[in-house]
Length: 256
Image (cartoon, rainbow, N blue to C red):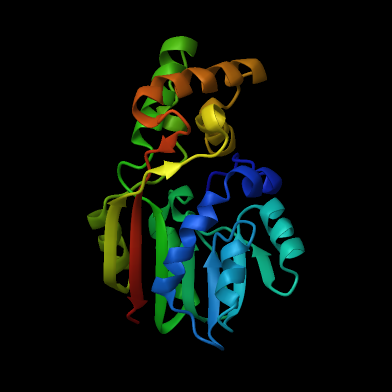
């Protein structure tokens, strides 16, 4: 996990609520049933865990960030939230289903994460996930790396905190971990960012922290602006930026 990434629950809910908003469609793939035990793997501030719980399922939310877990517990005190590392999480409970939205691309040890998910499921249990796939934020990331190199002399490629596999790479990984993949999509999902002309800058400040590690606040602010200007011809429509998101959506069943 990207352990130097710092999460602000308040800012996440204010400016990045589109993350859980887009995730609501994934719940249809999950099709939660009353009485099922379901683990939300990377639950953030708990909005999707709560949405799942309205089916009558018994939902637990797990997240790497202590701050996110605390915020989720305050928002939804009737649900159970725990802190854990999705790359190596273990549980005494075996779940009927595991759900994960916009979290697995932060877990660069994807093999370990898949094995952990497999261990936490009952035989025949369902795994439903969506996260960044190959090509996700390609323009934003290239603009960031180019700006850091040319304007600040920083080679930041090694700081990339994300795992964006192809559909083939990830389905093979799941099969090797003991899953049978039943559905898989790799699709483009241009994502409108809030805050108008500040949209890309706020996105970088929230999600791209590791790329700018060690820079002073003013240099960071200047870099965010330069990157925003680099992608403006492609991503700005006159009212808002649309981030170049490309997603993987996966449904799988634990074979053994």
